[in-house]
Length: 159
Image (cartoon, rainbow, N blue to C red):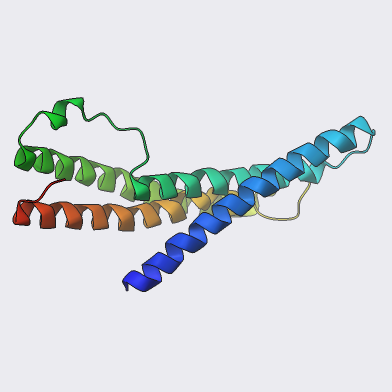
């Protein structure tokens, strides 16, 4: 199971990096084409679609690695067990928020299925579904973080 999760995480990072490069190329080419008085409106729509996926996938990758902004000034000075209890409580709050994002995000993606991009014949729900799918992935990451915190709590180890 750990191997499958590792492969998923690596694939997610590759997709995130690739879509970021694609966004830069699409926006840059759109500027060049506009200077040449050629219109390619689909470039911006594809870039917006990729931006939704890149931002949420990137947030998931950063969250998994613990690279999101955190304030640990208070918990740093607390006893380790109390800091772990607070960390578990925060992870549970995050888990609840992610569950709401997943549930209502899927509902929004379903309701957006009839809506299409102005220059593309694809449903807008392809962009909308990026939030709930990455929320599900972040739920898995949060459960892993809670499990690690509980194991560290039971073993009395460092954070």
